[in-house]
Length: 384
Image (spheres, rainbow, N blue to C red):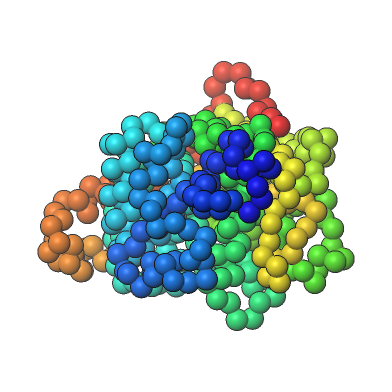
């Protein structure tokens, strides 16, 4: 790591995510949790063993100005759904209104890793509704498709989608780690969430391109922005063309200038190729960070001149919940596997309550998309 004179010691942005534990050594402010010890052993004994500290279970107590929490979990299996929900609930109790930004992996439409995924997902979403400010939805199947299509990888492993998702997370957090106008977690909530419950986001990243293609394909700001809006670029299985956008946050990195962003956004507005709800016709929030993204040397993703990550709030995300609810209903109608949960201390009424909550969420998205504009239009929300 660089010396304290250049990074770490007095650099508040850097210290947001890293803490100094020794002479020139910095480690992430992160806690890994799993109910399966072999998973945690990968961190304890794997290739990254020297990148983390095992004494990080009291991170919040060591913070001088706690902004909030980034929570990563998958809701299809036991740890991410059950323990993840409990953790979010405790964070709400212990840390009040501190921001909670979640990156949540939802079950894939065609690929299942657990027979009780629908139950876990519905029960967990019930907690996500109440205990997160913003939740970015991810879908392994969709991310696999992007890797196959854009990177020409025949035999995919978990490493491939993980590296792509890490670029999204890196772009979202770049403003916290480097100088940028969009530099607090709460700004995502402020700019993307029009109503408290409507806080489930789609994400996309462009360009996703291999090193071979990068040599002869240099995409413009307009091209990567249009690419980010393509349904095939979304990292959750839903089609934005079936719904309406409420707000979009476009985070550009590296070789991008405000003039090009202005022109691109103006073109999108003029052509009206992207459909927004009537009451928010120009809901763009734009940010530029001049720190280039980092890729793994020799990896699948190419290092390119300019990239964009889009986090968007669209009514089409209701498709994800509708699909899960349908599978839940098929199983719950016959009370299949419910005895497992009841045997662990849950009450059957918790299933009905969670399902009703998601039905209300679907209805909310439907109503938001159908609302008409009232009063005057707001400003167009473009900021840099």
